Each structure stands twice: as C-alpha cells, then as structure tokens.
Image (cartoon, rainbow, N blue to C red):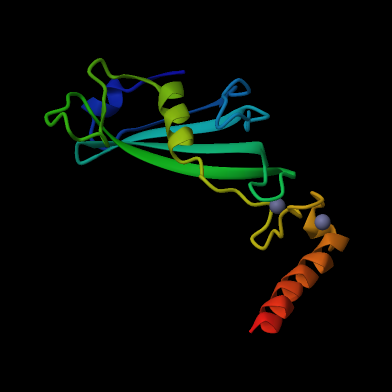
Length: 166
Ligand SMILES: [Zn+2]
Ligand SMILES: [Zn+2]
C-alpha cells in the first residue's frame, strides 16, 4: 500500500490516515505461518511543528505453537509502532528514521519489518505451562503421567544408594 504524504510534509498540523488489510498468510517466521487472517493496518501520519511521525496500528489474529508443550494457540493481538519520517536522512546511522524523498511510503515493507522485529522470541500457551513429559510425551497441563512418579522414585533410589555407600 502506497501512502502519499506530500500534504502532511508541507503543512504543519496536517494529519493523514489510511486503513487496509494486509495479507500475510505467506509470511514464514521460525518455520511457521502465524498470520492466519489479514492484518488490519491503520496508518496515521501527522505533522507537529514540522516533525512528521508515522503511527502504525496493527491488529491481527495469529496461531502459534507453545514453545514448551507445542499446543497451537490462536489469539488476537494489537501492536502499535511509531517512526519519525524525514525527507532526507542527514545522519545515515540513525535507523529509527524513515526516509521519504518523494513523499511516498511503501507501508507493507514497514509493517512486515516491524512485525518480524517485534515477534517475541518465547511464546507460552500460559505463563505456568508445565510442558511435556520428557519420557512419554504427555502434555502435563492435562494432568500428571505415570512416569512422573517413577522419576521421583528414581531420584530417591539414587539418594538411597548414595547413603548406603557412605
Ligand atoms: Zn504450553
Ligand atoms: Zn510421562
């Protein structure tokens, strides 16, 4: 989606808004395709005292497997990103700024890079997810398995043997 911002850059106090759906079903992150339905993007650019700022509001639903138990979780999320816009970068090292020499922004690229950079490293179905039993693979959120008891017994057995050898 192209966002034309000449009027915003040239007029102090000017605001321009646009909203659209961005299809990201083909976007693969860490081997999965999280964006099951189009991301609703609301972009707003405003000029305050000649400083032009772009605000991107992204609303989407996603499916992601829990990093601990592997259960796929479907949820909705809203994230907001802001970027100062400049016509020309004076200092090349400042990555925060987005250059818009011809007053036209390609929003898709910015949204995709924001979403990827803010994709959380770790994702759990719930904060206290118990994960899977390393022995039988049972999802321990659904209740304990029999190996658990044996595991405790095994540890006690080691302790018992250790004490005997003392
Ligand atoms: Zn989990
Ligand atoms: Zn088990």
